Length: 86
Image 1: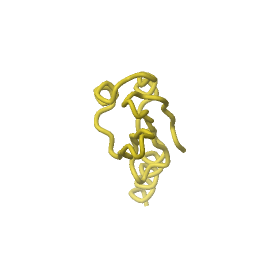
Image 2: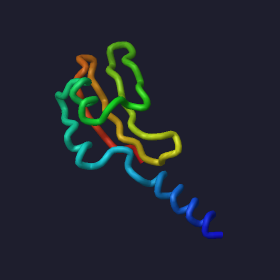
Image 3: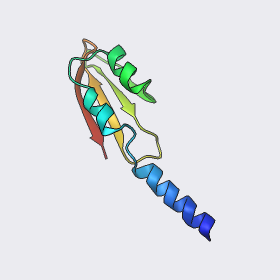
């Protein structure tokens, strides 16, 4: 019984925890390059590549997490905005 309870507690914690710390997220500011963002957070698990000159998006999270941290890049390759997605 303790094993099941421990597993469920860990699973809920893993799904609820932020994929990026708030301190690291605050370092990603508009105007940073992709290389600068990657130096702070590492390689993103998911990327949505640029299409039709709109820009691209990096998504930090896991498919089993309920939250992700997203970085939106403009067509010039610079950070335009960031947000946590619930």
